[in-house]
Image (cartoon, rainbow, N blue to C red; front, side, top):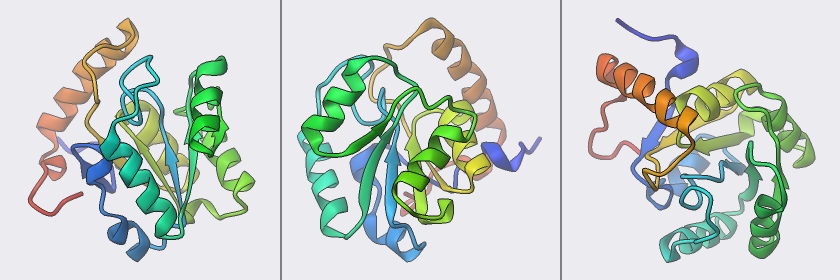
Amino acid sequence: MPTMGWLTPDMTAHRLWEIPLDALKARGIRAVLLDLDNTLVPWHTQSLDDRTRTWLEGVADAGMTVLLVTNATGERAKELARTLGIRCVPQAGKPLPRGVLRAARELELPPAACAMVGDQLFTDVMAAHWAGCLAVLVDPLDPREMGWTRFVRRLERRLLRRDHRWERKDGDA
């Protein structure tokens, strides 16, 4: 049973640092919009992996901008964004596209020039598609997460098993 297109990621990668920047640039991407928890850092932490730091530097070296787009509230997201020297759109309201669209507006880019990278189909991928961005799905960094998210993950796994288009192949990032 195929799923609806707005749940199908345009690209997939195991981890953020495995997303090939040349593939993003080839698709006309000029900005990378990043989810926070379990995409950029493990759930509810500030721990940034060295490979992630190196990848973020590569994004900048490739002439692309990074902006944090998160449903998280409070100072944690803003503080991490400040530490990284990037902008942040907190309380983005994903899966609604408003936070993603706000990020594109802040960057003065059309949504089609932005890639939304996240670890959840029902928030990050949906918001990306509804906003008109490239949707990149990564595996979550940490099994710890909110109870609601654990429930939604079960639905995601069922969809992923049913829709073989999402099976990763060598070179799919």
